[in-house]
Length: 119
Image (tube, rainbow, N blue to C red):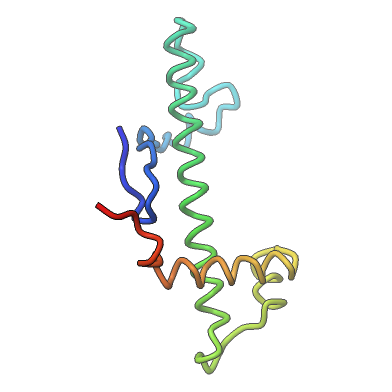
């Protein structure tokens, strides 16, 4: 199953992540019930789905981090933060914070209409 990301690329929609109950999640041998799957084909399929879901969640969270960093560094804000302060709060290097601010600004601007594919 695919979905459009709005930036001209297509993404695979991952399987949903289901939160495990706290008492089960605290068991180090238990991970999304993978240990109970005996068929290696099914185990590979489910583990792959989880890998894709976690990667998609990581990518999405990273985009939100970048947008938040860009908003916090916006010079129009009276309470704007420096790249160094954003880096400290996010536990990044200052150089990485600057790159994330730039990436966030690009995301907030939206897609460039000149680079959109023609129908």
